[in-house]
Image 1: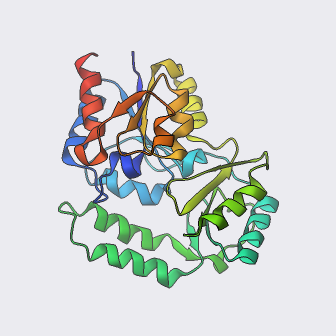
Image 2: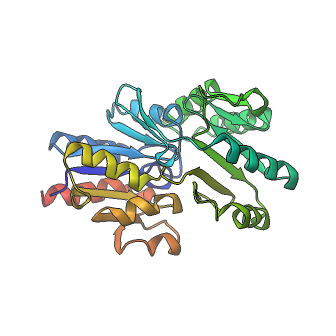
Image 3: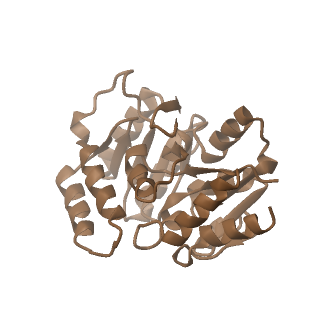
Length: 280
């Protein structure tokens, strides 16, 4: 019997308009009303993910930054797994020497190389006018409050790096980064899109974070269902007994599990939840 249902956000719970559909929201609330816990596992920061849920009054725990941080329902940081400062400095130096974009995230802020360009991208999304319930608008405005210039970051124990994004439209540059750092045992390197790499501590993975959370509740991974679409969902799709891969996922991601969910633009999360509840 499923006790915990965990969903990725981008490309899974969110559609192409970057919103949670009413269908998905309604099914999540039905799931919770039936006593099955719902949880988010995302590469996003807490502050970036929360507005999407708030627009639909979805109250749940969250795994953020691919497992590097776990937050309670009220936004309290329950657990974090930072990378060592020495390896972060090595990665930053490599990116600077090879003209590769990067950003770093601690428990509070996203530090970016070009704040102006980042904010212009945010405002461009605001002008799309595609979001009838304004959740994307709120999320982008919220992001502005937590964006800082990379030069403002200070290496100190009060703000350790939980996640680093490696950004380039040149696949050769991303491959060069992987060639150097993939053998570093303390790191987990994955991706959420063709133009990025996501780097966290090796123990900071969605699947491991879910397993730890479930164990604290007295549940096994046989009582967990997960749903996702990206490479950074691999651990949770493989570790849970019920790992649903979105139809819009790549063929590589589809190789992680034989269970399928409909496209994220067709309320795939809702359809899987409804199927679970029908047999619950």
